[in-house]
Length: 146
Image 1 (cartoon, rainbow, N blue to C red):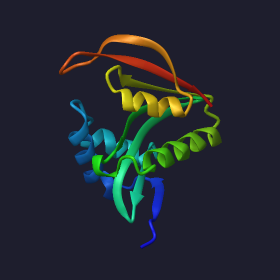
Image 2 (image 1 turned 30 degrees about the vertical axis):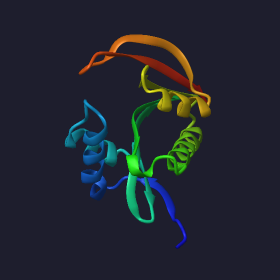
Image 3 (image 1 turned 180 degrees about the vertical axis):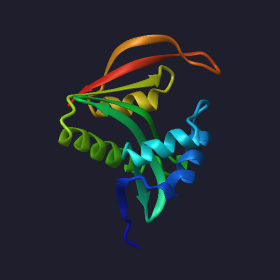
């Protein structure tokens, strides 16, 4: 069977999948109203694999700067280049919108995420003490010049 990978803007019918994946992967997560607004504002891209929801990126952009709030791929679909495809699509969308800088934060102990972002030329700007809670962990602020 041919593998079909699709990236698209989220629709309200994706809300439950987004909420579930958020809660399965993060200790702090956004509520339904936050995600509904992001969906309406076209600030969430999702990736599907063979028509199954497998991940999303939630972001904001103002003028020439963007910030990634959440980026996640289902555990069982990692290492299949789906995250690469989603991030490439996101970066191209931001370029098309005139974004020059993309910011994000990542846990200092999340080495796989850090190396993933570094593949896209995100650079560590600074360490942020106790950025994450439950448990307290420092974060890195990272930047990509588009």
